[in-house]
Amino acid sequence: MSANFAKCGSVLITGASRGLGLQMVKHLVGISERPQKIIATARSPDTAQKLHQIAKSHPEVYVVPLDVVNDASIEAAVQEVSSIVGPAGLNCLINNAGILIHGDLNSETREGMMTTFQCNTVSPLFVTRAFLPLLRAAAVCAGGVMSVNRAAVINMSSLLGSVELNREKASSYRVYAYRVSKAGLNMVTRGLALDLHSDGILCVVVHPGWVQTDMGGKQAPMTPQESISSLLSVICALSEKDHGQFLNYEGKNLPW
Ligand code: NDP
Image (tube, rainbow, N blue to C red; front, top):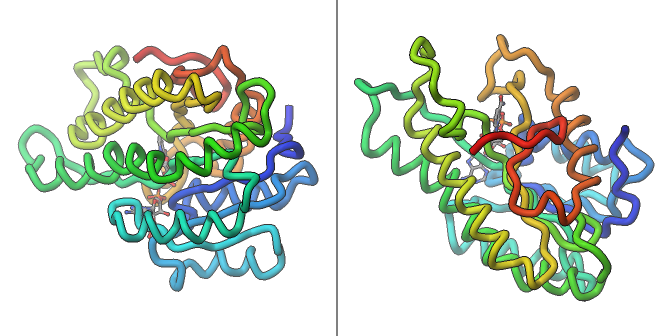
């Protein structure tokens, strides 16, 4: 199954300067069934050369500055995106930006915990809240059943945020801040799902696989291309039955 966003007016991706966010933009511009508008946001767009290269040859790509931990930046992005999407609103918000600061039981710091929580857990909530008027406009304008073609919030979580799966005593991967932040993001998503159901805004949290990016490292088993082509196929096919669920890049439900 390949990704089909032909009926989706607009997609916004946070953290599109590199890694999985950049790969989403690359993938979307490469398919014929792409969204009409692809809003690729980056906290430092001036240094996001690869993104600018794509935007140069693809007029449907809009590069917008957005630092997800900065409220003024969020507000400015909402204004800019509002003028890009117009009355049709924003159909799909992908909260992809994230950080991983290594820290085990001995080395974890308060600062590392709080910085990670701020970016990975708090920001997706506040970015979503800021874009709600545009998502609600899209839900009304597009109408129909719940899907990314209508209005959706997709939060990029991780298997490492699953409390249920964190049972392996031998695991050396005790990144407290990251795991906690993604477990929190899962709960944020469930809260959003409850609050936004009546608006017809689909809310889902996804795990992209362990992927070769700056964060995932070279030893990861999946390439960004493999992860994102599979994940976008899952995302474009989401429906009401997936609302509030935690899914992997193959569309399988994951334990919380
Ligand atoms: P990378 O570290 O490769 O890229 C992270 C992206 O997030 C960059 O574009 C970075 O921008 C951006 N970012 C970080 N902080 C901010 C901020 N304050 N405002 C805006 N953008 C910001 O990570 P991945 O691409 O691998 O990860 C993407 C998402 O997928 C993350 O949420 C991650 O937790 C999740 N994930 C990744 C896995 C993997 O194996 N790679 C596995 C499971 C989940 P900049 O270039 O400016 O630093």
